[in-house]
Image 1: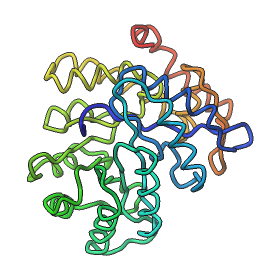
Image 2: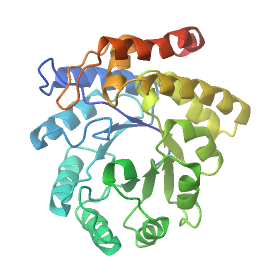
Image 3: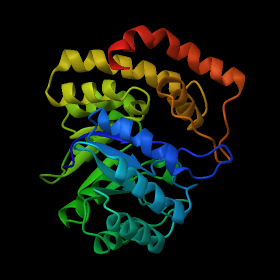
Length: 296
């Protein structure tokens, strides 16, 4: 189950920044219908820290109702407080989540043993697969592979999503990992190389814009079709470049609206792109339309 393509979907808001299940459900259905393995709600691009607790429940219910085929729902449950993270995890499991993904406690930097206790509490409070998220840009510090592997041997963690941004970081989680431990690359540009080195899959934000391209890339990489995976990775890199031509996560929502027709409002502090930012994003994306025709 812990293998393949993971798509961290944005949370789509109404025009005044209100949560809008009517926008999120159809968008998830389209992503799922493209053949993705896992739809990941409440990731960084899903604005996990901005979605209120009652909204989380509605978002997950809407997501699970909208899944088709083999896709399941992964849910971000990390929080600054262990008690809050456990509550998020239990709520997600009750509503049918397929797996939990937890960034370590953020804002303050706890000790390594405190982080271990946090993940053990999450494991004690839930029965479905639990993955750690190494996201130093969000948490403010990195998870050590030694700690993650120790928790894996204790059967606390079932996997890790590594979004540090370096292939050597992914390799650190692969090396010495217990048998059956799932490692995912969390950066679009590293997908093919990470899978080529043994990762079981990849998390691709670009799949929100061109889901069939992301499906093709991960399948080719897992099938060891190196040349094909390299070609597709080049296209994914260019789509990612267009997304990074504007501020995160607003540029992702803008491209999703332009390419896939999924409208979304914005919740402060994140705002709609300026006209200049829109032009910068489309200047990167428009030249790709012909190359992406088979995947749109």
